[in-house]
Image (tube, rainbow, N blue to C red; front, side, top):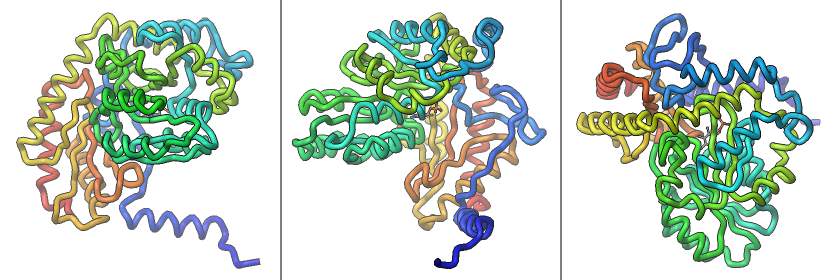
Length: 404
Ligand SMILES: *Cc1c(COP(=O)(O)O)cnc(C)c1O
């Protein structure tokens, strides 16, 4: 038997390497609701890394709906959906989502991670091909891996590369193209029109993950596919209820047969407890707010575009995106490879010292050399909040200190 280190020694060594590479991660503790100002480590800071984009997580009608459902249905679904964990409130939410998006059917899952894992594995397997954007979310990547289909990664938003890979996948039984609508780390939009056209040309299916576009894009927040008039052209719509909709959980939506397949075949769905009923009720109420108050999302997008312009005017690298997610690259040509992760971390800490909480996004979430600060803007941020974030980000990224 080879000598094997005890767990504590082996793991400590691994963690020390993470620390020295600037890749250490730790949980922070927020002691208040996801408002523009939160209490972090006993101190009030401006929150610029929450996905509560529309402020719905603590909207009075969303909270009231959750409270009513809690009283009526209790705290838990207490079983997987196929056993006794699918309640009337889940069904009501599914009907609401299908109608909102203009689709035949929808299914509620307990997380977006679960939804992608389940739906991809249900649709494709050995002998099939998934074509996946290189910046797709971990849940899509893991869904592809678990499915046992051949996975071919196309360069981010590169439809020529996608087209070439489609042409090379001639003998696949099924081909699924998977992309996010608004990319979670770059905030840019997928070229859905071109992707749909290619899918048609090659007989491929399409899966679009609207995690960050649900609630924010499209008529009454129905998503980017709806905004582009592509709803019926896309085979599989996935979205989360835990971001702009301020609740938790996710949905898969599309044709009735798609939903029947997921119910019958998606292991992550079948073997996991249903979404808590209060979360379903909260999401349903949140969609109602999106329908009643479309100006929330519209105002958010206008303000974030102005903020991006100001950061760019100050010479910062903010890639062209059109969403509420603003990535600000920390690497200049002077930054050595690998240094960008440490620099992002020190910039994030410097901002926190100044009372602004943003995310430092580093590998493996993004490719090496592309570490960044990511600002997530909320409809509830005031102009003063945006000004404060803007000024502090500019000051910190221009300071030599954060380069160390
Ligand atoms: C957040 C996210 C998910 C996961 O959703 P959860 O409900 O948080 O599990 C899936 N896909 C994308 C693109 C995401 O950003």
